[in-house]
Length: 381
Image (cartoon, rainbow, N blue to C red; front, side):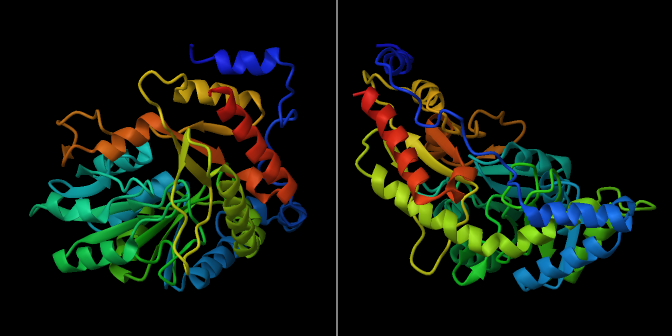
């Protein structure tokens, strides 16, 4: 049985896609965003370099995260590099990074002249495994770059304790998890510097954009000096800031809805042997689901592969795609690998990701989503 028999069988049996119109659109048709755009046009602020909207966004992000300093950037990818430069990371330094992560984070470490040190992820959260970090540390290891991925959250209290004990810094990448809470604190506030993204698909979106967050004045000053080159070389525009402000106000409520719908969806999918979901957060923590991850459990001799599952579920109009490729095959010339990285390699080969817009839909739509996933899984049995 080849990878695509499931898809053709569903079509042959006359079954219609569960989502015939395809996945919900993003960004939302948000009336407050429209009003912000029209107001920026009316008062001319859309064409200014810096002004009231970037000032308000900076203030509100600082208040939301209870941090003193915010620097707005052109993208989350740029923000990661700016954060590393703010920490003074450079030539000859090493930065610990999960071997399964966003590709731009690896490149950002290289961009400042440092060397990535790859360690494994926790198999239940898809995030950097705190227990794998300490064996990787050497005298030149100065920082770790920690991402919250796919609805999973890194063990920040453990990583913070380890970093403090070894005199290391943390860049906390909260690009996929704005507003999430870990140990009573907002994601992005456990690190020496946190990073946000406002890219076109993100939970807070301005098409592009990002920010760094820090209480360390030295980090903020280095970041500012790096970015200012007669003017701000990597700015967020007034127009982008204007549309982010109403979204930031709605973020806590929308995150609660997404979390409730994830619990509803996973409860209905828990008996599906083909799929292994990430672990839900402990009581008192709250994730924010930019993506929701599963592993497709591919077994020798079994009819399903990840590619076959993706072809079938996408035919149902569901926005589920493959995860990151990971760094397990990166050359030793570019990085230092520690351990066998088995969890990271498995994630690179098996991860599928649900895109977030459907998670703001009513419960009836979440039930339809569970039906679509079950339909596809059953077709492989």
